[in-house]
Picture (cartoon, rainbow, N blue to C red):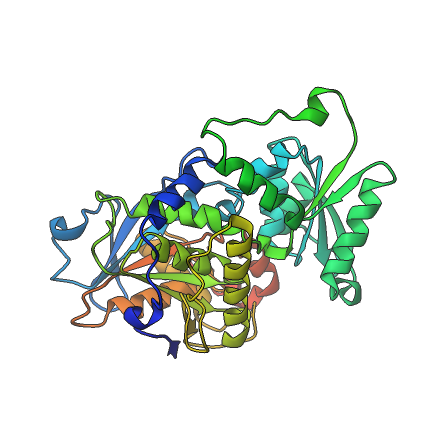
Length: 419
């Protein structure tokens, strides 16, 4: 079931004239983690049955020869951004990590599940910048470290936390950060720095570089930054907005053609960033997010919270009525075709992932990206549909290793041709 409104009904209030210019100023005057927002775009054409043809260099718009002949959807290959970091994590951290360096952060404290892609991303990207990461993982240490858990352990400092303590995440993070800081250090939360950084960046040139005072002067005081589980802060939206700005260039997806963007939703942050960007840039794009970790009420609450924080942190006053009433919103929250408790894999899904990988060279995982893939298939199979369908592939490769440990029977069924 798709909880949706028409695009016309969702856009309660058009942005004021000049909002696009303001957005450009916000993006252009900011330092980024990724050197460029570029990403590959592939095209999957449906053939007979569940088969596909992959086009790695597709034409767009009127130049697309299959646009009126076959069902297809585009795949934005953010799974290829980094060998160890999921694409959605790289986008969320795109505007975050430069703030760490700007404010002389020495340590980052964050949390996640045992196979958290978020903690692995924090560990890898912080290590690349000489920042120490402290990763609080829920539950017990597994017998064999693999997947994201292995990467978190290799690149960061992992502590396993009992579930009873982990249930109060904010207090847990606060107490641990204070223990790392000691008597001479300081603990920062995003609310402490984001408003100041936004005001500074909006008043400086694009090439502004703030000196790292504490390190340049040999000050070894520890500055600890706490990052929420999943990096679900308003600053995480910036990297996604930057991606949409790139994709909407005329030689790519463009600004005129209607699009249906599909993404899997854990925290929902990426989907909300896509929706905000479409409104900022006045794109005829709808966002469909497959709900995996919460009910629609929870995702709508998250949507309202992030928009409110974005308005506050970046001093934006012209999106007041985007969230206006029960049915308003910028994302169509989609129920998965085969609902289940978050993290569970159902029979036949591993084989489905194998089939897709063998036919297209694209690896999807049964928890996250397979759900988005199936929704993209459904939307792109509707006859007479004018809007083109775009799947944002967020990654998930390393997660397969953890799933293979947990679901030995399902993955064991992949064995063939044993001599």
